[in-house]
Image (cartoon, rainbow, N blue to C red; front, side, top):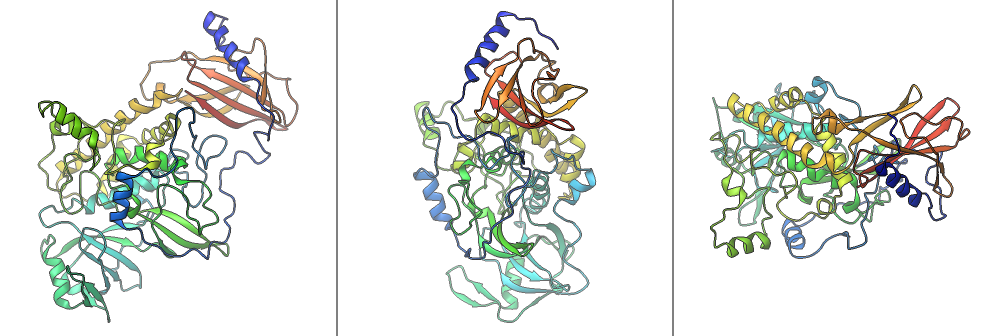
Length: 539
């Protein structure tokens, strides 16, 4: 719409004029921008497998400062993104549901649902699972496919297996590389031990695994009608290289050039983890794999092990402090000391269902902006309002029907537990939208139609504001000098024609009443018409 030159508009134009002069340097846009995909990977065949000590990881993140952080006067924007601020398709991330809405069938399928362990023959146990906190082992099915098999704790059937399945599908739709996880049922008779299988005893002794050891594992898990329910996670393609860290880079990977604490897909991951109650989001639950594509070997980065989500601690119900405080939280301790314990923390007031398959997962006390994992994560700490917007818009893209369809893949036997999870995820989704979308001007999905720049206002779409008026200022943008020349009178969504020739740029500065929350959209003139070259956000 056309806006008259009120004092507010004059102030806005003045701000634009200040921003019009930029220092000389490399041009802002290149001919191939925006780059949707990462560059072809360089050979990483020299990358070696590594382990990260869980204890070392715990102490380092709790008692030292990891990664590069923001400092007064120096804010570090997200990196590894295109000119729209979106992570590129590649080794870390793939654009999925928000960018091209997936059908319910695609969401339910997730990373794959055609390769569950075969029940046509026996499962050969080839390795005992000695890492993690849940019992399990590795099997090869009758078709030669290898799986990690994990179980629920005996007193809490389904509390780990259901989340492991359904949360993997959410993370897949959100763009991450994850394994194919399945709910599998089997009897003891379906198992046989391979030769030379070793098991580590509680005292650390390594010995050959016997049938008795296998039975001992199964004695500690739920059984119904002589059948065991498990999570069967299909082995990822490639060679395992161990976990990735949430800070720094992997020095033996020539393609890993962006410090992990500055990656948008890892900063924004904090919002997804808050939504799904993934407080165990740390290095031990990631996996790098050396894979091959087009004759080149490169490292692909995965999220794995989702049994400790949705109120589960894998071995039982989660701590009541989960998501509210770090495991080591001196600030919370001092607050309780200062009030002599008379002011209970928020987590102490949360109410949880009595379903053993759910644990401590709720939405009434959930605070999207204050949620934290078990211990400080440098990528999560570094997130900025545009990182939060990037994640929140994706969470809000899931409808109630889609959420319910994904939750049903967890195969909860109690429909009340299933409904509780669905209702909590919907309410937590809405809280995330309210907490983060309006931190910036939440306009997105830009296009030029019928001679005008159009977009979707996610704040209006999701009912956070009833409507919004926009104030525009167009400029000719000098791509080489990165400067702007204001176009007088161009104060609507109509694209000013005749200002630049082929290859030239225009810039539209837009705000919706709060001048600090401004979006600049860059248009490039091509022979066939205008194309969107990039977007900048300020807040």
